[in-house]
Length: 171
Image (tube, rainbow, N blue to C red):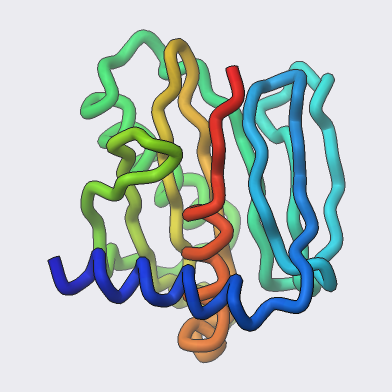
């Protein structure tokens, strides 16, 4: 309960202190979300690839929006697969170690979704923080893959949470 209240408060504080938010509205894939207007976006709404958009604060901090089919798994099976696959891909690319530091259910877009937070120490000694949100829809799963330097987590995680909290499914 405490975590839900803190997350809700961080969303309220984020958007109440933001002069203006920009809106990413993907009518093709059926979602929209708000993000700080000083962040940049790259949109790939019509792409057949999993990645539908990148929302970037800078070269390290940002969110990749993906649309997954669910891989013929129920939501619990998908989340277990996704966590393992994400860890394997990151370790395969960067080496090093990854620890899950938090995970659980979260209410996003009026649906019970799932999040997991990771601490990665790459082989090159760069330490990264990742937070992944999985939001089930009728036939797909909207995925927000968020990342930043670990030492910037305190500053960027409330913004990442607020962006995830602004998601609306429009289909």
